[in-house]
Image (cartoon, rainbow, N blue to C red; front, side, top):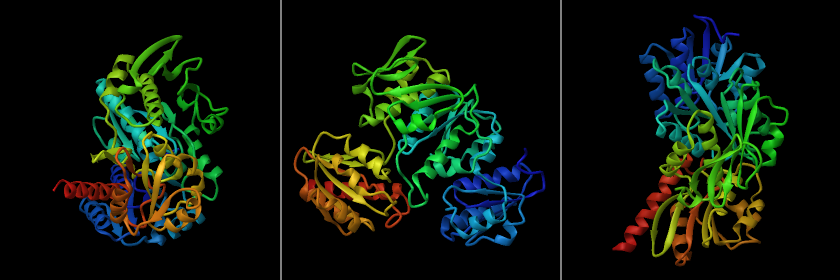
Length: 455
């Protein structure tokens, strides 16, 4: 079923990167576009101006709901909460609504690797794309990682492969999306400030498999019971990644090496000590990205070489500096409890932990076992009083008024051999517009401190 006919009115909700790209693509497809955003900041106004200059009707600072309700199709950006007035009006009018990813997928000639999960999506997506490119394959990354899939669909010369990072918000509004290779990294509570229940969040993740067929390939985390339960009964061929050797085709850790078993033959990739990423969780990310690359045609030697040359992404357990024998690490991307837990468990040295921001609905008490190695916790942001109530009785904890003061307090508390870890377990939106801006600020404060002490 076509999304729309040429000349049909199509509403685009949101003027972020994905919304603007969708507006350009729908316009190219012959739709009569009206794109709008409730925000009136510089970014939204600039996006609207660019679309208008291209002959596309766009508006920043509000939605013309009456006009939107006259549309044949509504394309929504993942950042727009379903509870907003415009989404509620669209839903009440029973208008067909799809994600930007859906529109783009229908225009792709490329084959797709679709990657989702609660944590590690961006790292695994970037790593899989790196493996394919390093092996000389024609491939790009897109989706939630930053580049809208619609931009790829607009290319005259499309790549052979697109590795797409998929959030639960994007998956919620997909119809025909069917990746050649699907990857489910893990499942844990998240976004409970937006979802009414954990089951609803997992149900959106399960939409990755909505159009599964016997020709589908699924790369799954065999160590995650929730993942295996979610895919029960799903059609297609499955390969598992585990941290212990397992029977059948898949990838696992064996005697300190990442290896793949295929058709009964074990193929060596890389030593865990040579993988330039912090933490055992990144062994799993590497195993799963490697399996996806293998299914896309890469050899074991190509995968091993690619793993050696991937050095991670900003704001994801990224070392910032080390001075006076104290390591400073930016894990600002840890915007939920499970991501912070993974980061805490990645270290053997004592920790000073900076956490806090805007609360997302999950209790912090589940972090207590992972904080055994923490010398102290410094809480910041809106959630600081709640963190103090829930963790204060169990760990050494204090509140700092802002990130810069937290960095300076961490320096006072840290002893030689410690690590100071920013792993917020919260969104950034109380103090910063994004986790990236928060991470950049942390790095700036750390480097300023380092410069002061070098004088």
